[in-house]
Image (cartoon, rainbow over all chains, first blue to last red):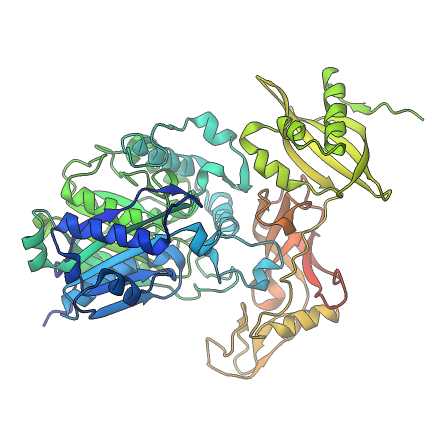
Length: 389
Length: 249
C-alpha cells in the first residue's frame, strides 16, 4: 500500500461568514462556526448530518464534539486539534483531515476556525507564547517577535524593504476585486503605506494583519467522494507540518533566525510528496501575520531568492493575478481580505483550483498554501486540479 | 523668571502659541481638544503612548526644537496638584490641516515595568531570576555535555541529561536583532513607548541570545553587531523581581 497522501483526499466544499470588525460579531464564535460549516456543506451538496469528522487548530474554543452535537451529526469518527503554533496549524489541519479520509478513519471531515473577540479575548492568537523571559522585556505580542526576525532579515540578509511593501500592495490590489474583503474599496498607495505609523520597527501599520471576528470551514473528503459532490474538487497533493531543529519556544534562540520556519527537509518533503519540482506552484496563499515573515516563507520555499535578489522577484507586477509570475494572496489575505487565523487562505487556495477566484490566475492547476510563518509550528499544503493527478 | 520657551533651530513662530495651547488643553483634561491636536491616523496610539498623573494644574512649554527630519519637538512640563512634574516631548508635523502631533513620549526615557517579570509558573527559569537578585546573569547549562540551553528546559535537548547547572556569565553581548516598539499594546507600556528591545548574543553563554530593553535607546540608531553590556534593574517594589537591561557598550 502506498504511504503517499497524493490525490487521496480533496476539498469538496468551502464556506465562510462575513469578516466582522473585531468585537462586533452579532453572534458567538460557535454560532459563526456552524454557519460556516453549513455553507461549506451546502457548497458541496452534502447534508451536514453526514459530516463525521472535525479538525481545528490554534486552540479554537469550539471543540469538535460540541460542533458535531450542535449539528446533530449521525456519527463522529474523527476529532483532532492541531497542537500549538497559532496560525501555523492552518495547513496542518487540512493535512490531518486529508490523512483521516485517506486511511478510512472518516469520510466527511470539516476543517474549521471561528473567532470572536467576545469569546476569545483580544490577541487570542498570542496566548501562551509570551512567557516572562519575553514579556518582562515588554515583548508582549507576535508583532514584536516578527519585527525582530524581520529586522535581521533586512539588515543582515539584505532583503530590501520594497519586498515587504510589494507583498502588502499585492494583497490590497487583490482586495479591490473581492467584494467580501474588508479592504474592498480601500486601495492602498505608496504614500499611505510608507507614512503609516510604526507598530514595532521595521513593521508599520500596513505590514500587520488585521484581526476580525468570523468563521470559515472547508469539507475534506476522499477523492472518489469529492468527484461525486463537486464538479471541480481541489485535490490534496501533499501536506507537511512541523518545526525544524532548535525552532520552537526557544525565547528567540531559533537556529535559522530569519527563516519563517519552513526548514529544508520539510520543504523537500512537500514538493516530493506532490510529485512536483521545487517551486512549481501556479499561485500561493501565504499566511501574513506580518509582511516580513510572509516574505521569509517565500524565500524558505525557493519561490523567491534570499537577500538583495529578493527585490527583483518581490514586485507588484510579479505578485498579482492573472499573469504575475508569483501571484500571492489573491483574495487579499489576512492583510486585506480579513483575518480569522488564516482560515480564509485555505478557501482561496481552493477557489484558485476551481477557477472561481475574484483574481483568478490563468491556468492555475497547482495552488500552494503556507501557514503560520515564525510560529512555533508551521505547515503547508499543495492543492491540485484533476489535471495534476 | 521668563516663561518664554527656548527655541532651537528654525522653529516656525506660529508653533509657539499652538504648542502652548496644546499644553493648556492637556492640563485642563480637555480630551476632545487634545485628540484634535493629534495626527488623525494615530490618535489611539498617541493617546496611549504618554502617561500623566490624574489631576494636572498647569503646563509650561519649555522648549521647541527643529529636528533634522523636519519635525518640531515640543518639550512641555506638566505639574500635578501634588506638585509632581512630568515632561512630555511631542513631535509636530505640518499637515494640510495644520500642525499636528505625530509622536509623543514621556521624558526621561525609562523601560516599561512589567508585572509578569519573574519566574514562570512551573519554575523552570527560577534560577535565572534568583541570579538577578544576587547581581548575576545566570544561563542554563548541561553539567554532562556542556550544552548551553535557552530558553530553559527540564532536560538537556542534546544529551538528555537531567543534571542542569546555572553558571553566571559575563553579560557582554552583541546585538543579534532589535526592534523599537511604538504601539502601547498594554497599559503597562504607556509612558515608556517607544522603547528598544535588543536580542543580544552572548559569547560567554555559547552564543545563546537573551532579550532585554536597551537603556537610553531614545533616538538611537541601533545596528546589529553593536556591543552591549547587561545591567540589572532592581525590583520596582518589594516582592517584585529584578530585570536584565542592555546598554550600549
